[in-house]
Image 1 (cartoon, rainbow, N blue to C red):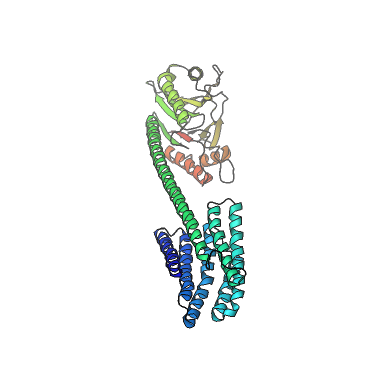
Image 2 (image 1 turned 90 degrees about the horizontal axis):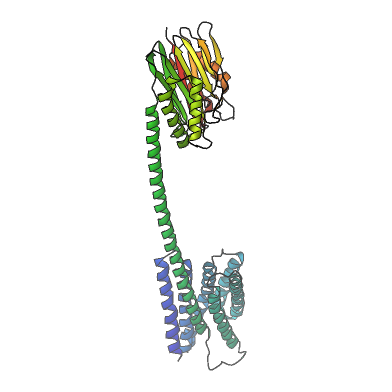
Length: 469
């Protein structure tokens, strides 16, 4: 009977130990499989030699088998404790190291001298208390599988305590069962294997779900990238179309040199500039600034350009401004408005009208001073009718006119300081003797040097008109 029990329980523990070792080799993320495999293999060795000493009554071999049995016991207990900590994702505590040290030392002494085996059993009892304490904590935290693992270990401990009671002859065997711990091990094998299988399946499901989520996220990211790329391409095309609608610098037109520069804050700008040359030689120049920037502002610019090209030559400036305001209001564009400036030059006579734009700077070459021309006016679209004003000035040889949107004077640097008109006047005056293209480039360079790494939040437009010698 003992032989059959030896073969059955040794084979059972060894087989499941090899099984869980294979599971660990398949997925090393589950270290609990490794600890449980070593725990079972050590238990198989312990069971084998425990039965072997009863099957071979010779005293010399009996003593050897018992020593091997005692030598294995501390390490099977330690790996059982490692298994518990690993299953419930716990860090190894100081008590774990103390108990492990106590088991190894007393187990070694008890292997050499059987009289110290009772001292070793005391540490086994402490080990059992530690396992029970960890299991109670896992149950209180309602961790997955806590009840299943607890049931297996409790049955193993109860039957192990039964064996200890028999060793101390506290009562006779029940139903002739002289070894109970191997039966308890069988219960533990079943409960732990069920838990590890379910935990592994649960983890695999989690991995599959995560992979699916990652795949979905990757598809979503790719779609967003494609949408962004398409949007960027559309904005680039809109910007190119907008720039194509705007004139380039002109080196000579009726004795005037004109240069236009625009630096947008986004792909599509809200600033606008243009010019017309009538058959009688009259030059009309405009610069404007729509509310904000981006696509909405770009729409406003397109509306104003169409009105400027088709209507401005047929009416005076105040009438044109009011016509634009009425058109914008009829289109119900909400809070979209447009500031605008119109300038006409004929026979060195300048006529100016403005609807909310910054002042015009005129460099007077004769006395090297800058004259500011500022008129009040409501933005286009704000009201139906407004009494816009007009001013006229005479121009002389090599005088220079500077038109700009508010993005230039209201440019902020890293210290939150505004560029303002004083610095612009100084920069303009310093290069007013140069060509129109050089003046505009110098002003843009001044703006870049001022803001440095601070982002540009508004469009910057510059128009330089120089009376040629």
